[in-house]
Structures are given as structure tokens and as C-alpha cells.
Image (cartoon, rainbow, N blue to C red; front, side, top):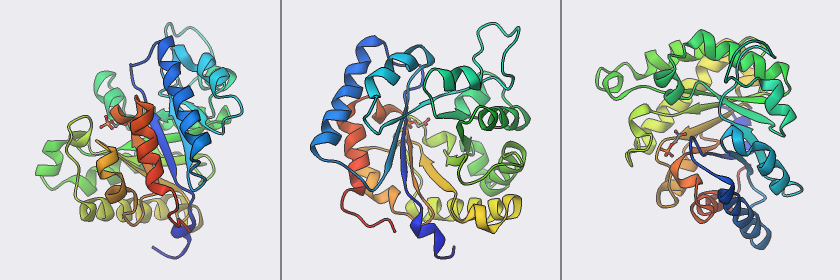
Amino acid sequence: MGGDVTRIRPLVAGNWKMNGLGSSLAELRSLQDRLAERPVPEADVLVCPPATLLTRACDALAGSGIALGAQDCHPLPSGPHTGDISAEMLADAGASAVIVGHSERRADHGETDASVNAKAKAAFRAGLFAIICVGETEQEKRDGATLEIIRRQLQGSVPQGARAENTVIAYEPVWAIGSGLTPTPADVAEVHGFIRGELSQLLGQAESSCLRLLYGGSVKPANASELLFVPDVNGALVGGASLKAGDFYAILSAYAGRATG
Ligand code: PGA
């Protein structure tokens, strides 16, 4: 889709989900050591640990160039919402990004496109960038409804005010998450091209053409090169393989020495 997309700086983001204790900070140190030894200047790196580790991770990552993100936020800045965490609190803890609308939250917590939209707006308000997740279930794929589902999720979840500088879209087929299954590169190319076209309708061609589109779902060192260089893929959202510094670095290093624009 046009020349601009080839100049997008890729992002490799690690989503630790509900994994990680204080001892896991050693993985962050190990990641830093690997990057110090063999830098990958071609891509940005983000790690999203559980909220309990944010402040310690922030200290551990100081000066490393590795950015810190969170996995969810409440739409409001503060108030009587026991157990919830606002985008402002995440920013205060050192996060620069937050994942919103991950399929596990849509499934486990009944999050709708409208609530995801409100959370993305909260992220913008707090100065965070939002990683907005979309993706079809196995049944929806079998029904041939993938593009229709993605269109509906994008229309509902991406707020007005979303721009390339504050928004990343992650395409994560639900059936590929944690399963070891991945779509073919041709399927990923089709969906990512479709997403860029939809974003062009929603946000305008200028924003759409430089907004980062991540692929997520069973990205591993063994398939990273195949998936990361698909047209319109500008990085990855990595779950299980982000928990071990060696695997995460191996995925990231798929970009080493490769021209990304
Ligand atoms: P996975 O998870 O890499 O373990 O499949 C990806 C995600 O859910 O973000």
C-alpha cells in the first residue's frame, strides 16, 4: 500500500500476560545484556509485564532503550473502581504504552469494542500509546467472517483521535494465540492490507500509511523471519516467547541487518 509503509519503524512488543514475579526481572537484565552485546537498532522494543512489576521493571530498564508497557487500563483517571488501574497510574509507574482489547480480556472480562475504544482514549489522555488488538476466533475464520469481524472491531475500537504516533494495531487471530498455529504469510498479508485500508477510511490515508500494524499469535524464533517481513507487518506482539530473554531477543534479531526502510 504505497511507499510510506516501507519506512515504518518496526516494534517488537512482549506481552507477559499473568506471568512474572520479581525474579523475572532477571530476564529483562538478560535482554539488556544481549542488546548491549548485539544491538538491533532496526526496531523498537517494548516489554509489557504485569502491573505488579511495572515500577521495578522501570528501574531495571532505565537507560536501556527498552520501553515499558502495561496490559490493560480503566477508562477513567481515578475513582471508586476497586482493583482497576488507570492509564494515568500506568504512566506514573513508568509505562509509555498499554495494550487494550486483547482477546483474553475481551473473553475473560466481557470487554466490548466500546469499552476498548474508551480505554484507548484513556491511554491517549494519559500520554500513552495504545496497542489496540483485533482478531477473529477459529469459528469466525471457519465461517469466512475474518475480514468482517476485523472491520467491525476496528470501527468500534479505534477512537477518533487515533494517530500513528499514539496508536498501534495488533492483529492477533484468537486461534493462533498460545496454540503454536499461525496463519500463512499470505493470509497475514491479506488481513494486514485490509486493516491498513480500513484505517485509511477511519483515520485518513496519511495516518494509516504510517501506523504500525503488529502481527501476534505464536510468534517464535523459528517463524519470526517468515512473519515479520510480510507486507504491511510492522512488528510483532509476542506472548509466550517474550518470557525468556533468549527467545524474545531471537525474534527481535530477525530485524538485525535487515533494511526496514
Ligand atoms: P502468544 O501470545 O505469542 O503466546 O501466542 C500472543 C498474545 O496473546 O499477545
